[in-house]
Length: 552
Image (cartoon, rainbow, N blue to C red; front, side, top):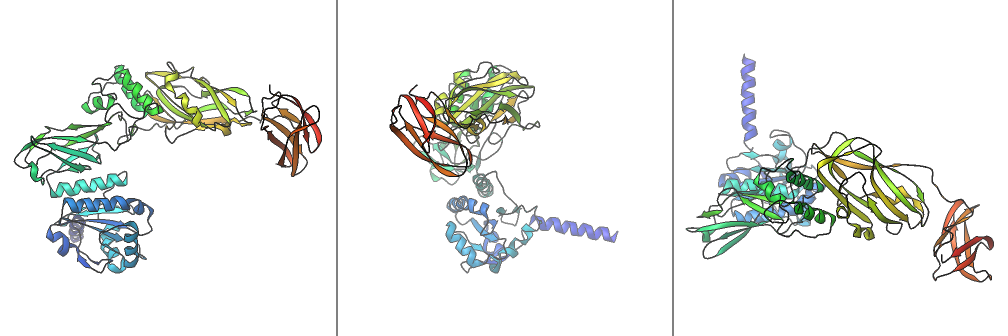
């Protein structure tokens, strides 16, 4: 019984200790002694600590966001907030911390090992307040010693917004600016309009009007705008599938924010034209939406008075599935499109079929083919297995840039069969080479993915079925006849320089060029600088090689 009582006391002590920040004293890199309670908490200040080290790559990434937050919080809450940087690395002394601050333009106090920084961090890196996940880790300590440990967002900016939101919630009457799923929205201009004037301020995640003197003893209307945004942010073919299912009545939107996000042309109603606008934006046909890409819904009355505010929900037009909330991943792995690899000779025309390998019902997909426009020319693309697939589903003008982006949406679902040609691509080789080396999926702008009837996203792989290269035999000239450029397929007995000459039928040398060859088969590309017509003789190192008919 005595042992159980002792254990109970230890548990109570541990719980109490974990909820209250232990005191510490540090000597900062500029030689100032600072005590957590005497200099900060007992004076009603909030202390925000970054656990870092000077060679930590993620800390370097966070540094400009961290400094910007520090400056904004000092301005918003003068005398009520202090930031500290404390190193977790034994070899980081105050001198190194000072160098780091200078290099990263940081102005908040910091301490290394000899300044007591590592000692001050011990309760936080040894698990007393939760699992320590490495640097940077951000810790908020409130007046009275309450600790908010490891504030961590999906990006540096989101992390800073979360810290700002926590500080504001403690120090002022504030309101939040969040996505439909509770994520803070950054860089918002808040306008409070009275009968006599308009007060503007910039906010991220939270805002407060309680300290604005012009808004005391008067009423005003609150509006929000966000202009520094990419209209493609959060928009994908998957969002267009959701809009299509709503229009078809298969999965209708019931929340106000969904109805707002789906109205991409800002007409007040959701129609097929919203899908058209989204498709043109994704394919690069349109550069911007017809209206501002962000809308804000007041969570209550937007008419306020005497420094009060209202929570705002930020809605990105077209963003019905991300980036704050992604569709659930598929457990099937990637869907493979199979294509037969082939060696293409210069000038050869070929139709490439991309076939599926499994049964599946899909409601949409997106792809972006990439290729070298100097090596391959795409003449046409069709999709026999996708109903309604036409020229509006891809941007053919992009082939001059070496890409062919496409997307297809059918909210009602289409079945893909094994060995069915999903796409057929008509192409011409501009120079010889293996097709698998010339054509690929691009993923930077339009990741290859499809969406099944259970509204799950699935990646798409392009799998090449390889066959033996079909290269011309040594001793041949291809193409023959040729308009201008042709290739000499030469079997060299050793590594050497060889001279290729083009002569007319009277023996006059019209062109000559030296090539460095490897032992074995070589492909020597010859392109006359001026037009030639008629039958010509090809010589290699002065010996007759063959005839080529040019200008045909």
